[in-house]
Amino acid sequence: MSFLCQPVSRAFSSSALRSSVFKHVTVIGGGLMGAGIAQVAASTGHTVTLVDVSEDVLKKTVKGIEGSLQRVAKKKFADKPEAGEEFVRKVLQSISTSTDAASAAQTSDLVLEAIVENLQVKQELFGRLDKLAPVHTIFASNTSSLPIMDIASSTSRLDRFGGLHFFNPVPMMKLVEVVGTSATSQETFDSLLNFSKALGKTPVSCKDTPGFIVNRLLVPYMMEAIRLHERGHGSKEDIDVAMKLGAGYPMGPFELCDYVGLDTMKFIIDGWSANNPADPLFAQSELLNGLVAEGKLGKKTGEGFYKYKVFVEILTGLHL
Ligand SMILES: NC(=O)c1ccc[n+]([C@@H]2O[C@H](COP(=O)([O-])OP(=O)(O)OC[C@H]3O[C@@H](n4cnc5c(N)ncnc54)[C@H](O)[C@@H]3O)[C@@H](O)[C@H]2O)c1
Image (tube, rainbow, N blue to C red; front, side, top):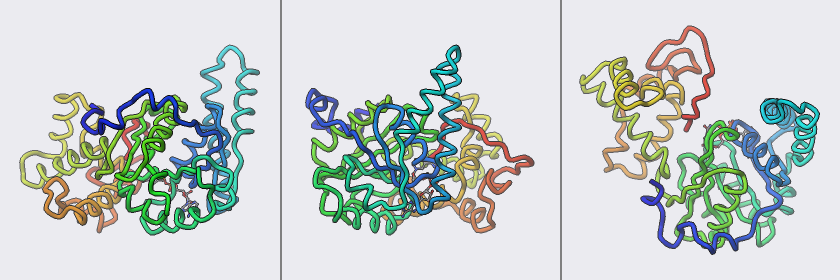
C-alpha cells in the first residue's frame, strides 16, 4: 500500500542502511504524542530531552511515562519483577526534561516537535531553534494535518527537515509515516526511516500531501459518511452498522468521528478545503459545522453525533 505514496528514489534501499542513526533526541511537547514518542525512543536506546512549557506539565508527563512503562514491564517481565523495575529505572534515566527548547536543541541529533497543531506556533518554534541548533541536527514535525513544507519554511535547513507522523497510543501503534518534502535530502529521509525502524516501528514513505496516507483516506471517508447521511441516504446508526458488519471496521464512521472529536475533524477539513477549495473530497458539511458551533464535540463533551452517558476511554488506535 505504501508504494502508492513512495517516490522511487525514496524506496527502502541499501543507502538507508548507511544513514546515520540518531543518538540524542529532543522531543518538544510532552502531551499525548510527545510523551509516547519520548517513552519509545528512551526504551530503544536513545537519550531523550523532553521539552514543554512548564515544570508542572513535565512532572505530569514523566509520571504518565512511568505508569506506562510499569504496565509494559509487568507484561514483558511477568516472571522477573526485579528485571522489570530495572527496565523502568533505566528508561527513565535516559529521559531528561527541560523548559528551554533552545538549549536542548544544541546537543541533539534530532529535534521532533509534537506541540499544538498551529502553523504559526510551530513556525515560531523551529525558526528560533534553527539559529541555535548544530548544522547536522535534523528537524521533524509530528503534525497530523499541516503541510511539512509550510512548517519547514520558517528555517534555513529545508534539506534537513521532514515529517515523522506517529499514531496514538505511540507505544502500541506500529506505524510511522515518514514524510519528505520536495526539499528533504535523501540522507535526511533515510535517517528518519532508520530512526523509525530503530524505535521498533514500521515506517511507510509519504509525500507532503494533505493527510499523508492514513488520514488522507480516513478523513474523506468519515466526511463522506456525514454527507451520505445529510443527503438522506441512511441513518447514522445504519451507516455505522453497515461499515462495521459489511466492511469489518472496528467502529462506524460516526462513532469514530465522536471518538476523534468533531472539532478536530472540522479543523482538519477547514485547513484542507482552504488550500484545495475545488476538491470535493474536502468539502464542508453543514451538519458537522453546526454540531461544532453548538459545542457538541463528541465523546469528550458527552455529545456529538451520539449522546454519551458515561465518558469511557477506549483505546482503538484509530486516533488522528
Ligand atoms: N492526538 C493524536 O491522536 C495525534 C496523532 C498524530 C499526530 N498528532 C499531532 O501531534 C501534535 C501534538 O498532539 P497531542 O495530541 O500530543 O497534543 P497535546 O495537546 O496532548 O500536547 C501538546 C503539548 O505541547 C505543549 N506545547 C504547546 N506549545 C508548546 C511550545 N511552544 N513549546 C513546548 N511545548 C509546547 C503543551 O503544553 C502540551 O503539553 C499535534 O501536531 C497533533 O496534530 C496528534
